[in-house]
Length: 539
Image (cartoon, rainbow, N blue to C red):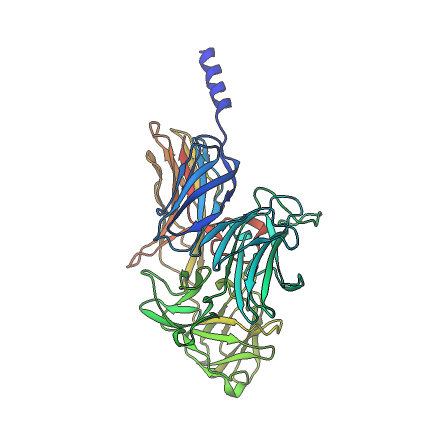
């Protein structure tokens, strides 16, 4: 008996730890391609890479921490999550980017002035990393005078611990453009060359989270993807909102676009719900664009509308607008009855748009009822108010810092506060359950604006041999604990599991609970900042 106990303890001591996946290189690929990918971190023999997406495959090559990655042609562009898993659990997720441009790998050395890596043809996506302390990568691109080039960097958005700075040097080596933060810490830019000749795109970065040492950071995990194109490139669509059903016609803007072909039709995906943010893949865009889903076709502002007597009349719904200069402000007039309650929400930062908006509500006499800039944890402002008198109330949108963004697009949602709820998982950590034992998943449900539909929490995607009884959500919301049970004879294995909130009304409303995956060091937004899947494993 003592010998058996000793053997059991030795087996437990020899048990491997779950993998720790710190980086993938390259951290993405073009749809329809296959390439060798390496992993950094504690990813030992026997670990596998697992993604939520059926069209992305990782097959071990037989070499340490190396896989053959294949991205099927039909996989849409965007960010996807990858876990490393072994018999004892799974890593936190890492980001994998699927793109549409031809891809090349960085060729070192390229960090000395005048010796950047030549880029023979655009468009291109360069897969690279800052490997040595103080590293500054350079890429040489030939541009004609007056020619525009658009670009963006994926680094922070891939989970790299870096705040990237991008500079462009002209043929004489003079710095003529700098880009740092875009919608997150990753730079985005449009640059127009004043001189013909070879320009150098330089990439360097500081550690994120910030450190006392201000030297340029580097290391195996400091990976990035540099997207460059001289066009045609779509950088924005207007309106940044589409109807929940049918087609919505939007206007494209960017560089090198045919002025006769700026109208583009977008089909709403099946199941799109008003108030939801979705991604749309627009031909020519370097990344998917995000749009707000509207009940019906968005209304449009009518310029000039920056004075009270010129306000654009609107009804409840979504209105599309654009701030175009330092002095510009957009006014909208909506008729209200005494006692009527409305809410106005600006959607800009949440859609990856640069406008830092401020919102003001005025009564029919011009009295300010509310003035909001940032709304708590949200980057975009929202305001609720009750009409004290009958008449036209005005909603004013402006740039809160009067910077006069030339592409200050936004969507303004107006109407009664929509009943709903949020469902939040405490974290996205992998959950490992021993055979014959149980564990819990906890989700916090917050009911909004008088939401009354009874909700039930259910779990889907459990590994074989595991079950979880559904749990009714309390009438007032709050924390819900779901017990997961592994059978004594359950086979070893893991899967991505989701907690779903089911409504009782018809048609049944099904909403997955989500968990933030960027933590307290989150800066801005990216195409993928949360997950609704938790790795659950039987051991």
